[in-house]
Amino acid sequence: GNSVTQMEGPVTLSEEAFLTINCTYTATGYPSLFWYVQYPGEGLQLLLKATKADDKGSNKGFEATYRKETTSFHLEKGSVQVSDSAVYFCALSDPYNAGNNRKLIWGLGTSLAVNP
Amino acid sequence: GAGVSQSPRYKVAKRGQDVALRCDPISGHVSLFWYQQALGQGPEFLTYFQNEAQLDKSGLPSDRFFAERPEGSVSTLKIQRTQQEDSAVYLCASSLVTSGILTDTQYFGPGTRLTVL
Image (cartoon, rainbow over all chains, first blue to last red; front, side, top):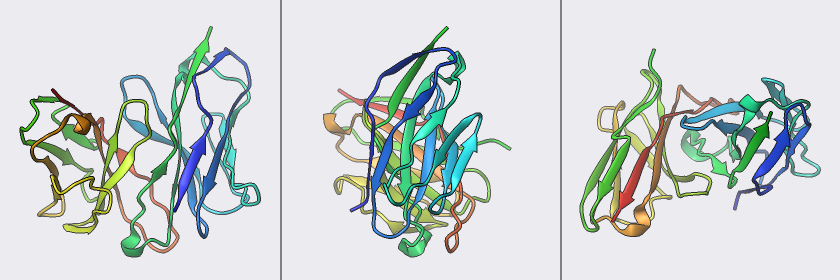
């Protein structure tokens, strides 16, 4: 079945450091890939997404590229800020599920703490 | 213009009690999902509605779990005879519409934290 594996946290960085959070997936066919973020005390928010191979999703300085050959969707940011401290989740959905069922399959989440 | 809302935000139940968790999706959103998130874990899919039709309930962990969306808007997740292992955050998400390979954004509510003593 479909699954998502992401690097374990917590990740602790200093402000302006480079961030990479690894995410790999197992899926039949061509899933859509997502990064969601959960800030302290808030609900899950979509950060970025990609729907086909070689697509790059980007938002708020974060980027991730859909790599079919390595079944990966690593999240990167060139210079993190204290405000980026949150839990980041990688997820996938199968766009060909019956009934337009876009249920999300999730990784375990990676906690990021950015120190000033 | 409100987002997805859920109530109650927190629920404490004694083992064996029944609970009902409510989700108000964004108005006009066709798809509605329920997820369960245990502490320190990623969310796990429970069930999916398209309007009032429950098209997938494969993630419901037991027959003690029941969900409904009778008018295609508000949804209720009911857990009968709660057990300690039911303690988790229950998340509701809605999306406008999905078709073909278009992937629509799921908008999440704040969740209901259920603690079973």
